[in-house]
Amino acid sequence: MSGQSDNRLSGVLNIYKEKGYTSSDVVSVVRKILGRVKAGHTGTLDPDAEGVLPVCVGKATKIADYIGGGKSYRAGLRLGVTTDTDDLTGKILTENHVVTDLITLKNAASQFLGETFQIPPMYSAIKVGGKKLYELARAGKTADRAPRKVSISRIDIVEYNPETFTAVMDVDCSKGTYIRSLCADIGRALGRGGCMSSLIRTRSGPFRLSASVTLDQLREYAAENRVNEILTPIETVLPYKTIEAPLYLEKSVINGNPIRVSVCENGSGASEDDLIFLTLGGNTAGVYQRAGEFFKPRVMLTGE
Image 1 (cartoon, rainbow, N blue to C red):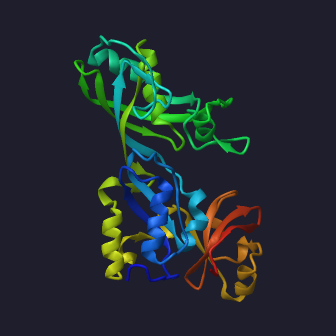
Image 2: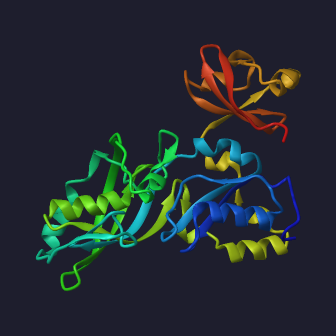
Image 3: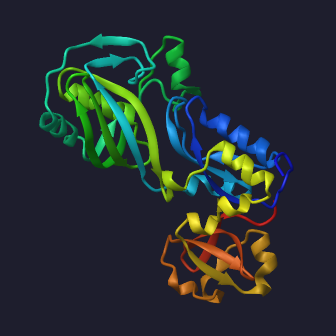
């Protein structure tokens, strides 16, 4: 039932974040719907952006930092306009007439394929000196930002309107890539400037737009006590091997002690530094990492 706490819920929800919500807003609504369970998102989307926002629930909040995978976006690009936020929500800095064709635009975009470095925009949630960059930007301040390595494997220009100077592109990229910065970079490469006009995240790691649910749909599942049907288990989200520890080590496992590789079923199947799920009696105890002859705990999933 909506609003009734259920501490048994554990896994990742593939939420469709609608425009107007911050990522934190979505988490707050999820907590309210599910009865104030633990919850946290795995990657921020701007309020005007929409699309896939994985939300970890219950014990899954402990493995949020381990959920990686690439991201996919459908982005709107407005050429000839630059803003202080690199998107159309910001203050316009310059406006230029644009004369370019589809081939020239594709060639400009292709310059940013592969590994590259991006300077995070001032309007971002990255912290510098304990302050979020967007907080400094709103106060009229700037801060030095170290370039970050990102990887962009695909940029497909799927639409281009030379009369309105607008384009739509599909992008596959690594975690941490700023699509606003990419739009600004493409406009800069054309010599006329550019910014992002819209953004939909179509994939985040294993979570895809086609399988996402809105907050209203989540309310319906909660009202019918069917939330578990749309929760992705931790073991499905993380592609780790499962290795069983013997039951006589239950106390050691619960206490978070290292476990010898040699006593675990299929323990030798894990290589040095591999992350694995250690199970006990078929239940996942936590995420462990092999270090020499031991599996050492990284995230314990026992208890609350």
